[in-house]
Amino acid sequence: MAGEHYSAFVEEAFVKPIRSVLIVDDDYPTFDEMLDAEIARNGQKEQQKAKDWYKDPARIKKVIASFRTPGRALLVDIHDGTNVSSGAEVKIAAHLHQSDLLVLDYQLDKAKPGDGSLAIEIIRSLMCNDHFNLVVVHTSEELDTVFRETLLSLMSPLAERLGPVELEQAQTLLLEGEDELEGFIERLTRSISVDQYVHARRFRDSYLRTMGKSQQPYSAFREECGKLKWESDDRKLILKYLLEQAELDLQSRFNPGPDSQIVWDDGSSKYIKTNSVFIAFSQKGNDDDLLSELLSALNAWKPRPSRLFLAKLRAEMDEYGVMAQSAVLDNQHALAHWYRRLLASEGPNRRWLIAESVARHSEQLMNGILPRVENFAARLIDAEAKTDLPEVLSKEHFGVDLMNPQERLKADYEHNAFVSSKPPEGWHLTTGHVFVVGQDYWVCVSPACDTVPTQLSATQIALFGERLPFMAVKLNPVADGKPLKDVQSNRYVFLRIAGSVKCFCFNDPVSDTSAPTWHTLYAEKKGMLTKTFSFKVLVTERGSKGLLQRKRDAQVVCQLRYEYALNLVQRLGGSLTRIGLDFV
Image (cartoon, rainbow, N blue to C red; front, top):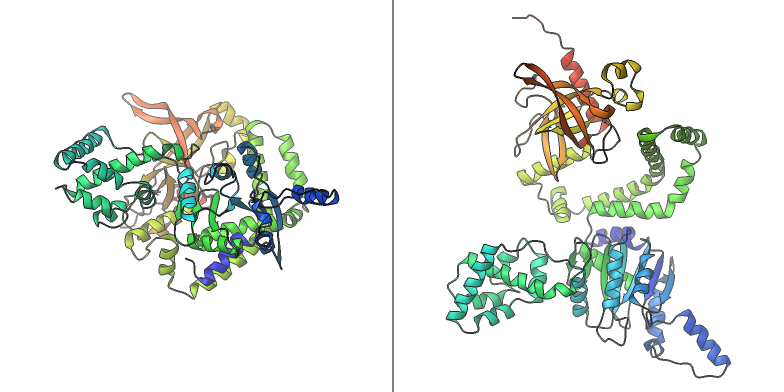
C-alpha cells in the first residue's frame, strides 16, 4: 500500500485526469425512464417500477453526486444494460477514452443470477483498446466470487507443459500411491483447485517453496503427500501435474484473446491490472464512494514512479495538448519549408522526410508539455527523498537491490544501453547502425551525409553503380559479469539485442591503445534497407588465390544515438591520423 505522500501523486496522475464517467448498470435510471415517468404522470397512468433503484433512489443519487463534488464536476452518463445484446455492450465499451471511468455492474442480466458474462465481455473488449482504461466493478454479489470469476476470465492458459517423460513419471507416482492408499488420487486431486491454481499463477517463482514449507494454500496437498515416502522433487512434479490438470478444467472460462500480462491483489483493496485495463472492485452499499475505492485499489497496486511520470504526461497531453499545438503551428515559414520538402521528395526519401517531419512536430509539441511533467516529477522526488535512502526506495518500487553488486551491474548495463542506443530506424544505412554479418557485429561509421542514396554523386554512381561504399568498425564482445573500470574511456557501446543488454568494445578490450578493426564494405541497392532492416553487403575476404568479394546477408539489430555514433567516428578518425614517433 502506498504511503500518504505517494498516494497524493497516484491520485494526481490517475484519478484527477478523469473527466467523464460511464455507468453501465440496469439498476440505474435512464433519461428514457424519467421521460416515461413524466409522460405517465401527465396521462395519469401507472409507471412501471421494476428496477431496484425505485426502492432506494437516495443511494443512486449519492453515487452520482460523488462524481460531482466541488472542483470535480464530472460528466456522468448512464447506460441501461437490460435488453441489450453482448455485441452492443462491447460496442459501447470500445468508444471509451483514457480520461473516462467505467463503472460496471457485474450482473447485467437479471434473468441469470450471478452471471457476469456480459460485464466480462465488456472488460475483454477494453483489453483490446489502445487506451489505458479505469474500471470499477460495482456489484451486489459476493465480492470474492466476483473477483475470482473476473480474474479467471481474463487469464490465458500457460504455454508451458510437462513433457512426455514427466507426464509418465507423474502418472506412475500417482498409481503407486493409489495402490498403497485407496482413494489417494481423489483426495490429492481435491487438494488442488482454483485457489491453488490462482496462487501458483501469481507467485510463479515461489509457489513451489511455499508448498515445500507446507504453507497455505498447499497444506492439504502436503498432508496427503506426507502419507507416502516421496522425495521433494516428486512432490514438486505432482503439484505441477495437478495444476496442469486444474488448468485444463478451467479452459472454458479463460480469455480466448491474446495473452495479457495480468497482475492482481485479492486483499482488502482488490484489483486486476492488464496492459490496458485497471479494474477495481466495490461492494454496493449505502456509503458508496467509488473514486475513493478506485484510489485505494490504485494505491494497493502502487504504480512505479516511472509509470506516474508517463501517466502524468498522458494527462497533460489531454489537458493542454491543444494549447501546445497552437504554439507549434505559429512557425508558419518553417512548416511551409518542411511541407514543400515532403511534396518534392519521392520514394524512400519521402518516407524518411515524413518520419523526420513528424519527429520535429512532436519535439515542438512536447516542449510545451514537458515543463508541467517535470514539475510533477520534481515534487514527487522531493517528497520521496525525505522518507528513506535512495537504495531502499529503489528496491521498494522496482524490486531491484542496488546494494547487490550483480543487480547494480545489471542496472548500469541497462542504463548505458538506454542512453546510448535505440531500436533501428530509417530507410537506408546510416551512421550508428549496428548490423550483424554471420556472427560478427559491425557499426557503420561513415558520415550520415555520405550514406543517403539520393545524394550519391555521379562519380560514386559511375564507380560503384548500385553499391554504397561505407566504412564499418568491427565491435568486439566484452565478457559479461564484470564491472568495467574504464567505462568512461569512450571505447564501449551497450546494445539491447534479443531482449538482453550486451557490451561491445570499439577496439581490443584488453588494450586501450589498440587500433580498431575497420573495413570498407559495399551495401547493395545503395544501402536501402528492407522493412525488417536487412540488406546485402559485399565483404572482402581472403581466398585460396587472393582476396575475394562475397555477398553476405546483413541485419541491422540496433542503432547508436547520434552523439555516441559520432564519438566512434571521431575515434576512428583519430586512429587513422595518428603519427608514429621514433622515441626509444
